Image (cartoon, rainbow, N blue to C red):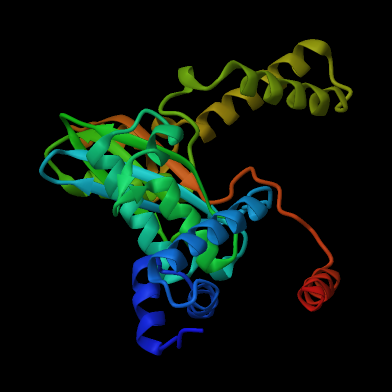
Length: 295
């Protein structure tokens, strides 16, 4: 059997980015053949990716990128299983690279993004390799791409909330203020007339149920319901929201004073709407130990 040296392990690790012990095992199985060991690792890491694919990825990060030359902006959300991996340097670097790739290639959807070439592989192959290295399911959940003839601004609140805004106006501070405001207030739409009908219907139903409990006449109940709906529309519409830096004026009024306007925006909150798995941690650890001992 060939001797497996530290330099051989380091060489394989540099090529595959796989964990050191996995590289050593692959080289041992391949009897020191670097090419064969690389093939074994690709199979093993791919199998690992398949095994964890069904796990819930409710943690994660949001990354942004704006290409100042082409004036294209990108906002992406990547998910993982734990907050620990969400802080991992390799995961953060992958997210940054994906955001840059979205801005450069402008893919139509996530499937098209996963098929794009990246570091002599596809994005999906790089993702699956990273799964093998980190041991968690990793997904690219969604992205927004803004090719623009106007101005773009982006804001990250930590790594979990990200905003991309397209706006028009001479003052760049307006774009920064808009992005920060959106991150803080989380509007649903640009204006009240763009709020989806199903959301309004739901709010109207809730308001009607509350108002009916007041015991007041029907005409008063109707006014109460309408008042609640109008209040809701102002709360979720960007232009009608009080500006966080000066709540004496709305965003619409601030923009008018600055001779600016908003064209569109996207806000992502990492893991939003994904139900987290509530498991028995002790039982999971015991199961993992038992599985390792049975190998």
